[in-house]
Image 1 (cartoon, rainbow, N blue to C red):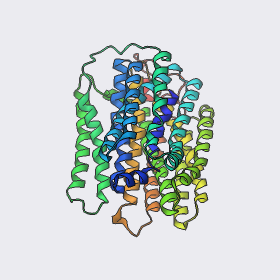
Image 2: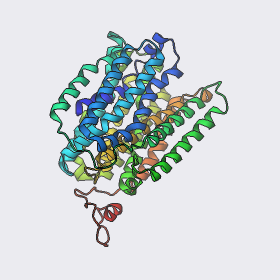
Image 3: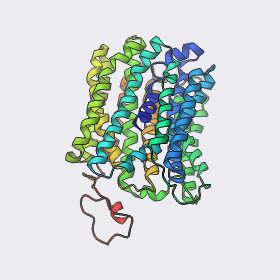
Image 4: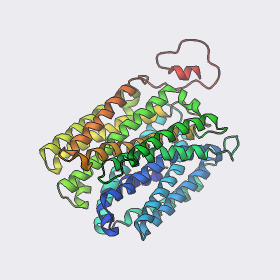
Length: 466
């Protein structure tokens, strides 16, 4: 499961340093190259809840094998793509494969370990692998692009994904699908949930482009709002909804997923700012930029393994707030480096702070987001959490980087604008996180009628209502 998580995480960031080489090979500009990154992330995030629901209805192992196979085939075809259009299509299919495979993998990990120290350690390993994959994607991209060519950033994962398929077929126990109408998959809900962030991202990215017709941006944003409203209405009426609305009655999990979106938006923004500053501002090559980010990769491993030990002592809320604070300090450091035009070494403190922010923030939020899950809704909970992570990252990049580097803001330091927007999101995320309980209970009441008594300080009222 961790090997699958690693290569999926690598694919989120591995194309960033290779984008100039891809553009030169196909003769496309930076505006078109945006969709190589955003298309994968938004499609994967938008379809993750469908993937989680498929795992619950059809069985996690079956869906895990299907999604991993789709991801591997799409990776192979992306590396062999003869045209830029086909490359973008394969990136969309990679996102779909991730959306199907990853919730099943995370649900498998969650159900292996009971709530408490064992699950927090398991999720710590899971988060450490994801964090390393995200950052090592930059390092691997620089090395592979410089020595083998950009196509190998996709091809190199194919044999490892084949190992995942074979190992999962033999090592993951079969499971029974959840009882229910398997044919009533909520495809309209999945389409609306995917269309909402895609339209929003398209509107934000196009807003800063000269020559964009004046009606395109408001039409895209209005379409995103309409898709979001339509998704809620479809879920309320569906016999077998993609995400039952009762899932959002658990206020602690809702707060955790909202805070995840805001924190992931800032973290994803920081990764691109590091890349842009090293390559565009300082003129480093792919290999040099990748090696400069090694401190971030190493410190991510340290913090992701350290935080689970502190989770039980500090409580989830304290860890999340610490993560928000570290990330905000990193944004301030990036802004200071950009305004002073310092060298690449000056970014190392910001990288260490980002590692601490990701380690403390995302590990704590992952733990809270799956609190109280059962066999029936483990896939939904993991799909919602991962979707919040990916769509938050995509939206953060679209807003912070898209607005900060828009040609219409010529004259303003784009790094300063992007960090200010990310900081505003982090402040909002900290306000949301403060509404979470100070400590997540080690055990959660089963879904039976609860006595009409006041909840204890460590129990969320929505859990007590059960």
